[in-house]
Image (cartoon, rainbow, N blue to C red; front, side, top):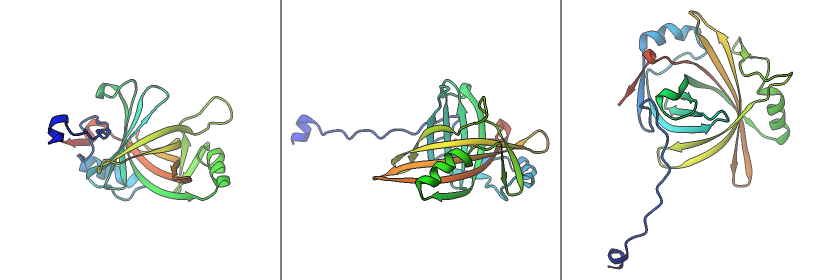
Amino acid sequence: MFSKLFGRDKKPEKPQAPEIMGLYLGGSFELDNLKLSLLLPQLTISDCARSQLIQAVGDAPLDSGGNLLRFYTDDEAFLQVVTDGGLTENHITDVKLWHFYETRTIGSQAQWQDCLKNLISQPTYTLDGHTYTRVWSAVGDTSPPVAVTETTYEEDGDTSTTDQFMMLYERPLENDRTESLLVVGEEKIIGNNHDRCLVISTGFDIQPADIQING
């Protein structure tokens, strides 16, 4: 009775995951089978699901005024969309599909500092017999990792925040394409403890003709 008179307290709305290009939390997309079949033999990954379901979405604001949007899928992968100056298709500057290669736990402060100073950013990085060249280089002798803070939105409504320190590398492929390598030091605060790891992923550029967004 009193609830009818005075109204129930409204529960605060949960933050909404960002959307772009028709990509959204719980959505899916299809990769062009023929193009992927031609590209796969050149890549580090051995296979890639043609149909991928988006299970989480990450959003990391960039110092440049853009955003790093990540659509995490059921294929141990994420479709990354980089924007500059806004969150519409007109602001998109880069789209890549990444697959996780390896995750290493970092167990001490000394290991974490060594990771930040020496491991993440190097002139070249060797992985699986391939040599990748650093893309993000600063003026001078050192090129520190690029720092971002990513907010991740889960399907159940939960959100989490991760500080990331990352470096991008590339190696050439046939037909003027490249394979990218992303080396990231990730840090989360869980309770009073630091949860840290080194995450290595490989990826490739996605062109409009390579992908179909399921509505």
